[in-house]
Length: 211
Image 1 (cartoon, rainbow, N blue to C red):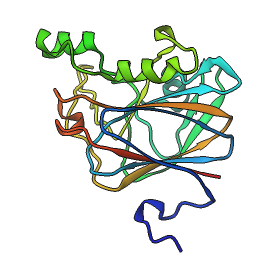
Image 2 (cartoon, helix red, strand yellow):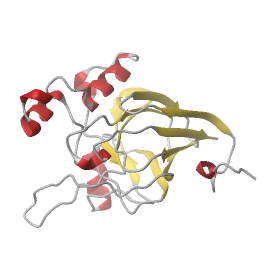
Image 3 (cartoon, rainbow, N blue to C red):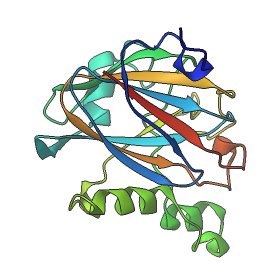
C-alpha cells in the first residue's frame, strides 16, 4: 500500500515523478494509456497546460472543439480533451475540485501590461514558460494555442464578462488525466502575482505519471 497521500487511488507503476518549481516550465511525453496526476502541493496554484500529439506537432489541444463537444465551458471529471482534428487526446479521469478553466488563457508580458500597468512588463509570464519549453522541440510562438488552466477559477458572469478570482484548490488536491494517444504535455506552473489565481504567491506542483 502506498503511504504517500499524493499516490492515493493511483493505479499502476510510477514511471515519472517530478516536482515543478514555482513559476517554472515543464515538458514531458505521456504515452497512450498512461495517467498523469497533477498535485497542487500547497494549494491555490494555477497550472497552465498544453497538449501536442507526439506523432504530429500540427495536432494539438483545441479548446474550441472540447467546449463544443461537451456543451460546457468548464472541464470536469469525464471531460475528453479533443485535438484540432477532433481526436481524443486525454481524458480527465479524476478531479478533486469541481471544475477547471479552458478559456482564461495564459498570462503574457503584454496582457500583464494591459491589465496591471507598464511596471509589470518585465515580469515572467506563462507565455514565456510555454516558449521556453516548446523551443526544446522546435515549436515557436505560433504553436501556442488556447490552453487549459487546471485549478484556476474563471467564472463567467451573466453579461459574458470573465473574472479571475481565488482558486478552488487546496494543499494536496489532484487532477488525473489518461492519455488517449501518445502526447507531449507542456506546462507553465503559473508565475502570475498580480491576480488571485495563485493566491498572489506561486508555489510548486508535482507531476506523477503511471503506466
